Amino acid sequence: MEKETLENITQRLDQLEKIVAELNQKLSSVVEELVPDTPKDCETGTINATDVQEDEQGDNLGTKVIEKILERMGYPPDFKPRPLKEVRKSMVESGIRPEDNEFSRAIIEEREK
Image (cartoon, rainbow, N blue to C red; front, side, top):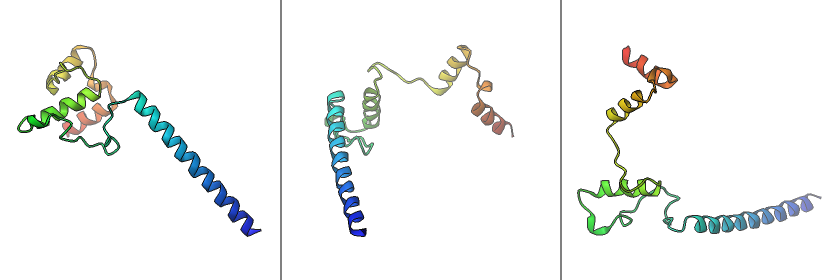
């Protein structure tokens, strides 16, 4: 009886492994269809310096890598990040009050200590 149970478990595990392999293959093909330019190392979260043009390595490498990341995130090429003080000022002018946010209140309270 134990041998039958063990054989059943082995068969079920084999079936599950096949199903998982098929699902991985299907998922990979769907991802390739939706995002054909995805780098092969996207699972690691690393950016290769070769993704940025090799002839532009130097002082601007960090800038180029950030531009490449923003491009992959869907930001337009002419997007220019603003300084934090300017963003905060814009938010306040738009009617967003830091005092209304629970996390901001905690930060403000810690600053006042």
